[in-house]
Amino acid sequence: MNIAIADDLEKDRQAVIAQLQQYINQSYPEIVKDVIFDEFSCAEDLLSNFYPGKYDLLILDIFMVDMTGMEAAEVIRRQDERVPIVFLTTSQDYLMEGYRVFATGYLLKPLEEHLEEFFSTMEHIFSELISENRCITAVINGNEVNIPLKKIVYVDINDRHKLSLHLLHMEVEMDDSYTSFQELLAETENFIECHHRISVNMDYIKRMDTDDFIMKEGSRVPISRRRQKEVKATYMRYLVHR
Image (cartoon, rainbow, N blue to C red; front, side, top):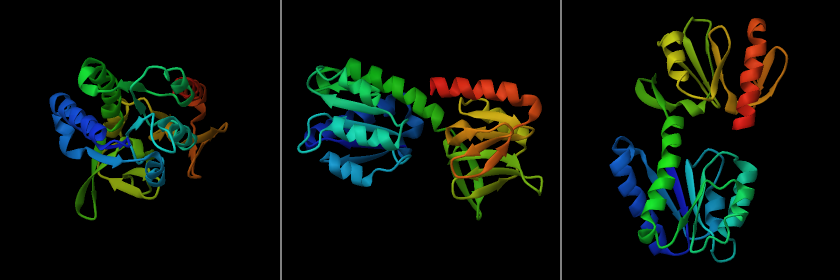
């Protein structure tokens, strides 16, 4: 899990990291070793390192020299609609402005004086992040690799009758049965079985045709005729609530 903190005051960045580490140690000790913090002293440095999918959480100070955290969030939202953005601020005056960039929350400084709000905000965010970051273990070139479910574009059975995970830039073949994998996908909100033994990650759908999903990376995934009505309804609900 990658978390970015952008604040022009080092002491405030360190305060955020310290409180996050304490929260994660207490609430989700199993992910402690997997959490990486990236620090930025200005919004411009964050943006130069940002690309969609790189970070699971962004914490931005509203008042920074040159570009503000709010301005940086506007740039980020044009590239990534889903990454949670939390603002650091000394005032609640900008709460309404945050709706424009779909802010997940606000943390008031100094954090030490607002710990109840801090932990409440983090619990809301991390409960969703943990669910979104479920992984499946695959063996690639003899090495075990944890693949986050959110990185899977779609799943099907290949010509060798093996379970095939289609990622953005590669395909991974597994010995697991489709049924066992489908049970794992059923625990997430992003996947839908659109055809017999084929499931798609709705986050990667570009558009829906009558007989296919057109995925963002260009592939076409078939939709079963007998499931068209159900699949369309599920996908429409997903679009409304995403």
